[in-house]
Amino acid sequence: MTGHVRHANGLPFPGVSIAVWSPTWVGIVGQSQADGKYDLPLTNVPPGHYFVAAVKLETCAQQDSQYTTVGCRLLSNVLEVTKTEDCKVNRVTEIDFTGP
Image (tube, rainbow, N blue to C red; front, top):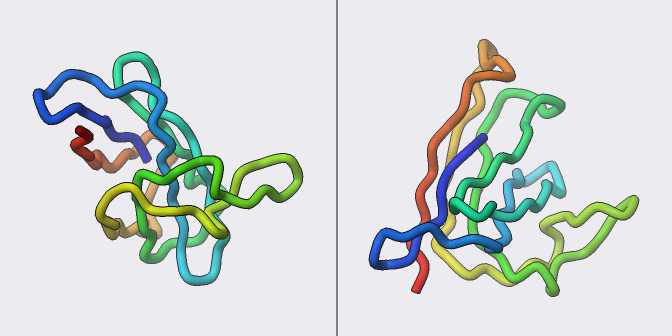
């Protein structure tokens, strides 16, 4: 899953933590790059509905030295995306968040 984080004026917003999770999966957290783009792999999760939001990284729990979405404080609205059975690694969903 890829997307972009932008300031309200449309400029890229780097360093924003983005989380993706489901009701049955603790999820993963990544950060937007210098150009505002983020890329969160969903290759090892089953088809279904997932949630995406900007989060405050310091509030997220860790598991095996990786950040999860457990306890994360939300900094944006939560968007729902669907991963289908035919979803391939190169298929992406674009989600745009607008920051301050």
